[in-house]
Structure formats: C-alpha cells, structure tokens
Amino acid sequence: MIGIQVISHGELSQGIVHSLQMIIGETQQMAFDTLAENEEVDSFRQKILNQSRKLDRGHGVLVFVDMFGATPYNCAYYNSKFFAAIHYQIIAGFNLPLVIEAIMQREQLSLPQLVAHLRQTAIDTIVFQDNHE
Image (tube, rainbow, N blue to C red; front, top):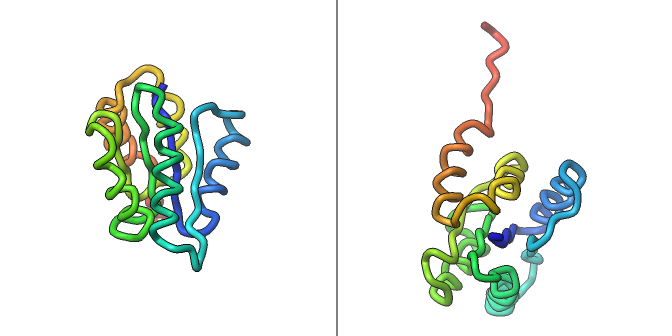
C-alpha cells in the first residue's frame, strides 16, 4: 500500500486528515505534518523525512503539500533525493476530495499510476458554480 503524507503550514494538514477520517474512517499508513510558525527549516525537513521513511513500506509515499514553492514543498522536494523517483511523488496543492481519492485508489495502483489518476481527478474536485445560468 502506498503511504500518504499531508504537509502544510499550520494546522491545515491535520484538519484535512481529521475530516477524511470522519468521512471514511481510520486510515492506515497515513500521516500529517505541520510547519509551526517559528519552526526551524532544517528540523522540519528532517521531521518530514523521518515520517516519509516510516510511511514507505515498499510501495512508495505520496506527499501532499499545501503550496508549490513554499517551505513544506521545498523541504519535501529536497527530501526526494533520498528516494527512488517511483517511490516518492509530491503533489503541491490539495483538497479533501483529492486526498480521499488517493486513499481509495492507493491499493489498486502503483505510485506513478496513482499520480496520473489524481492529475485527472484534480480537474473534477473543484467546481465553479455559476448561479446566473
């Protein structure tokens, strides 16, 4: 099973994981990490690396980060050098439906297949409703 790691500034990742568990129940091989306001970058990077290593049990880890180019992304990207590309993938920008879909599909797909599937799914998880039609 692919490990799922959700990383964010503040408590966003914790909230996503807790909301997910309200909807689909307890999940295995999933964790969240939060970047505290004054947390040192090197210790944060090491913390999320340790978590990624725990989550990868042979099928890889999918890392969701809140924003492209920000500290959680930069730390996850730096950590990618410690994994084979087929065992470590990052998705920058996430929402609850996308993370739920990852959980629901992670046993049926390889990590590269899961990322490809989520790329398409992401298009469908945000809807702009025009009430003027």
